[in-house]
Image 1 (cartoon, rainbow, N blue to C red):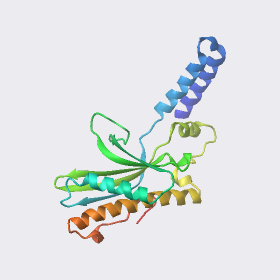
Image 2: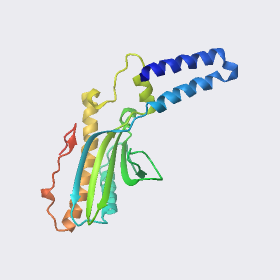
Image 3: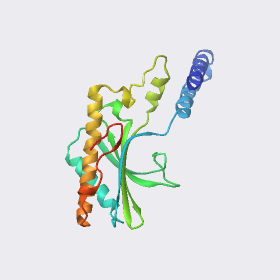
Image 4: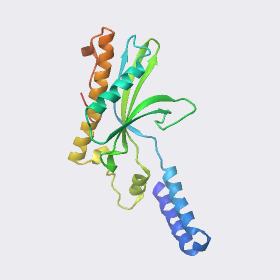
Length: 209
């Protein structure tokens, strides 16, 4: 259905461009493509995740977030950008409504990996602290257009990545996971709790431990 809409709007855009060029047909054509990308925009898919509830760690969320960011930076992982943003339930940047603060890791080693982001959160739950991270995939506007073309292949879907790309993605997620665990372990030791008792294996496609 979406492809049918895409082709209809594409044809209309071409017609407007050639038949109504003096009246700004090219802008209408571009507008049609923007509409297609907008209506096909989906919420990010969660591919991998890990979480843990730390007893008695209320108020230590910022400490874990800062430590994680510092540890990731110290590993000198190539082309990894980190930023802190308030996001909504759909993991998109938000200012109002129900928002939570996340540390977001973006792998900028290549254009294809920028659609894979890791969202890290540490949120108070009563006297405890719920810590978690999520590896997500959300197609960019250019990928959305590629997937609408005839004979498209979902080249950025994790199941379609070649061996080397999958290795790089696994290394990227594993590095963040280990840094996050190190920050969590530090808090557990400060609270005189045993870090070896937490389940360190992630849930999802990669199965990192």
